[in-house]
Length: 136
Image 1 (cartoon, rainbow, N blue to C red):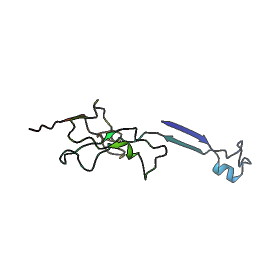
Image 2 (cartoon, rainbow, N blue to C red; image 1 turned 90 degrees about the vertical axis):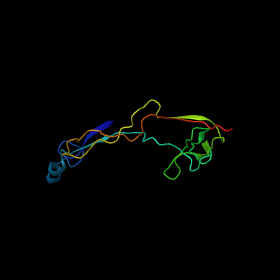
Image 3 (cartoon, rainbow, N blue to C red; image 1 turned 60 degrees about the vertical axis):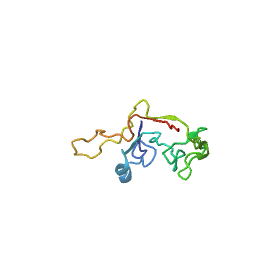
Image 4 (cartoon, one colour; image 1 turned 90 degrees about the horizontal axis):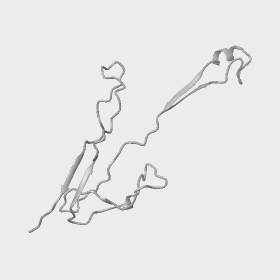
């Protein structure tokens, strides 16, 4: 988190409107402040719209980083870095393996009994799944 406070340069003794007249008295002594909280954004998962194992849900294999040099809202990641997994492969998928919570936003409703509290998450808890296909 980064905070700043800047005293505006108006009024007697300052760079602008320093003559002490009406404008200097009216606009002098004001400050500009702000707080910035940079964040990397919320997590998301890449998925396939069709499965490769008899229509069952499947997730693509990542063969590269998936990053673009200059992402924008129209094209956010490199979809060429994800491929369909081979048909009938066994796999173990782990989602949120270390069970790290992705906290939701705090309640910002002033007057609410839970104001300032975070009471939700925006991600699932640990989820493991194993796929196995047996043919005989």
